[in-house]
Length: 313
Picture 1: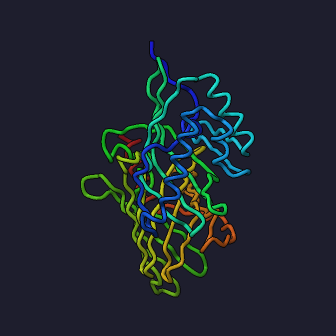
Picture 2: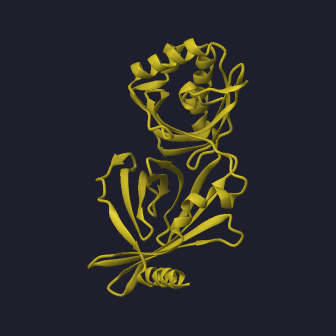
Picture 3: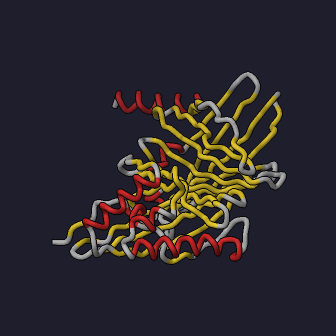
């Protein structure tokens, strides 16, 4: 009977066919990263744990989003690979990098899929998001996040884990009021999020975000456009009950920004949002406090009435 290999897929080696595009560069800019990926896979296929580990920075971090497993440091990664190669001497890998985007000239993010093959085992598919940093003339892996790649039948099915966000949400303080509306696009293949920021009874900023399923990369992605001229995209993944949105953005003045939004559903009417790992042109920015956002009072009241009516039937 065929068995599934229960090992971290991206740890095994991610990159075989690098079909990459960059939001800020041409093919010449991304070529060194493609070469680094090709060298990585060559080392993997030779089952050379030390050579594979050499493609990571010294303080590298690998995270398996499904299990919560974290491996920190080049030495620990080398030891993990040595164990994997010893127990799976014929393991092979094919995969694809679906996009490469540059956060700064020295930081890039590669997303894609990887499939592990071994004798007497079912192929195992994963998606990954890998952050590369430039060390002198070479590009090295800094952080890799990996998830099992479930294959939904439709985009609507793929977005069901985010269906709880549909509705109107409000974040209100003494100074500003932020209202966010999330709805299904016609056909149900996308979620549309629109927001407006009001201060002193005047709208000071608006924006739109489209959230969809990328069937090629097999991941949830989003594209955002703000009224100030800034725009960006993000990759959505679940981890320990939270949604992590790894985002890159071009600001209105042309500066490059990046960060990860952590979205936590507290209950059906409450969520928190926090921005961590925020950088502008490679310069770290202060981590924001988590903001609590609540469903609009009118929607909560309507839901309460429906519950009461249902209970009286």
